[in-house]
Length: 349
Image 1 (cartoon, rainbow, N blue to C red):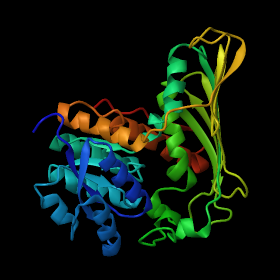
Image 2 (image 1 turned 135 degrees about the vertical axis):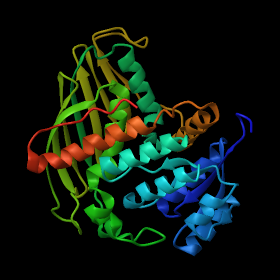
Image 3 (image 1 turned 45 degrees about the vertical axis):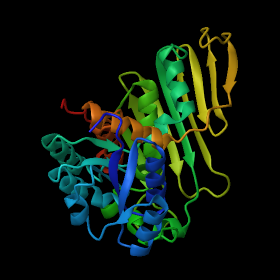
């Protein structure tokens, strides 16, 4: 097996996100989808047909196949843990849709199983591969902000009944609306991406958090609105205001500021104000970055994962990144009843 040979991947799940993940995995050039599994056989056959792959009849068949080197899990959150444990026992590498698990306890079981089996584990926090996010990290690294003192996140969408009840899926299911199965609502399912790339951009981690949240207009028992106050590192203060019940246009913006400047990330791109001459820009002026290359962020994530598998190195979005993200989410949820919660530090694996 050569370092450039495509990784043979079985796609587990054939719903909307699963179709995108499998398609972009195939397009990455670093991996091949060799088979598809879904509880909905028609959906599995349709996706397999598009990717010229086989249809598996069961997960046991997937794990027993010598043609499968890795599994791509695009399944409900509550299935991630047991599916990963089984894959590790079978010696298969694991790519899993975010979040890694519904609890830190399950996440640690997954991480330990993969380490024991000597297989790689990565979670799909691939938004960090977006060119504007990469540029933001570069500007921070070059000192555009100085010492970071504040972070603000605004994230509002409207999720209709169909989203929560699975009407858009090839296999309708209400798992998203149930905390026991999803682990949480809008924070867990959507804003988790923002938390990941803020960690990536700033190099900082949340250290203390307090949240107020509720389910005000959606089915089930997960939050559809949340407000979070957070300390980043030992100095910066941040806030998150997010909901899935805002009527009208989606709103998404991240603002990061420090002793020397401010960055704003939104749908229009990226803007920077700095008192320093950074990136060839004059200081003391607002500079907008509006044009970025069109890339597949999921394919980039897959390529880095395959490189890690072939070289025996750690994936850039691996166990530590997945654990730290889930630690933030779990701490935020716990804080509603426990009061301000100190976010745990990732173990030294």
